[in-house]
Length: 198
Image 1 (tube, rainbow, N blue to C red):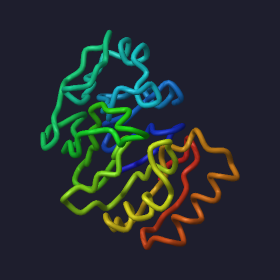
Image 2: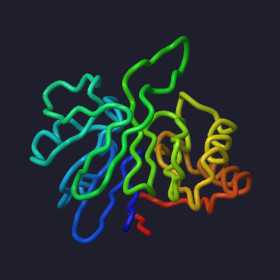
Image 3: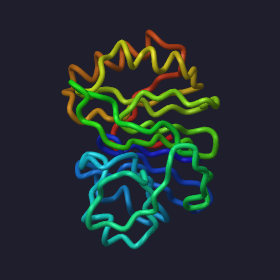
């Protein structure tokens, strides 16, 4: 499976000519959706979903059943649901967005385990029950601190981990987060710049 990271939380998965895109938000490059067969959206915030772009795309868009996404037809899924999107097997896990302060924001947030190997948690640090080979790690957010991210990676024990959710952090801060995660976890952590694939 080819994994390409785009700006912020957007990731493109490709295998055997099939393309699945996760969280193409308003900060993500439009090219992330070129040739997409399906889209997974973890939650309703604009940094994870560009409603106007997706409305004109004409492919299935899967999102939490409880998400408030006006002007876009989505296929609602719930935690524990298993389905196929663009030929990839997907399991939805988790359920709620992490709190920032005083219980806010509170919205539906699903993480997605794709082909039982790649996990995108959206805006949460939910640890799925099944093993994960490749973890897409939120690197920064107003809803977390670095110590929680390190504990999240250690709890999952992936074979490899790559940062997402990093567009609000400058280069100096990003370098610091990358060093902490690489040195504090035994996860094969590696930074991928927007547009970089593996």
